[in-house]
Length: 201
Image (tube, rainbow, N blue to C red; front, side, top):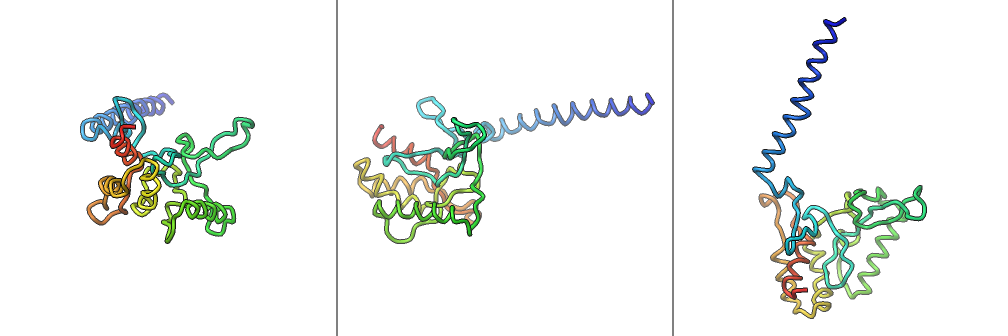
């Protein structure tokens, strides 16, 4: 029996040290040397203070800021721990609504979002990402079309020329990877930081 247990224990110890300790440490070391920013969460700082990550959306409610995609994330109801309530941009509970295209709840929510935009004076086509949530509920980016939709509101709230705000949006727009992968996008946090730098707010 010992002849079977001993090699099993030796192999378990060896592979635990190799795959549970040495390999993760080696990969962490390589990541810290090659891509330290990404390895540490792509954090964004302002005045020496971490204010977020370029990978995680935040809730910007003020008219002074560009707003990200709607968020379907939820959290525990503070009044009843057995229930969930809507908590937009809750990074502790990333996830989409899982509502399908035939869902009345989804259709009603999108229709209400469209109506809100119309009340703000938005005319013409509305980009899908302006009224629909992402799979994570924490999408940090919006489409250039969604950003363009918000230029007039932000410019008015900040008392800036629309052309200046549009120039900031253009400067913060990232293209397709290698010119063909993905879609053009605007990082909302980076854009709002650029806006704050203009006014010093």
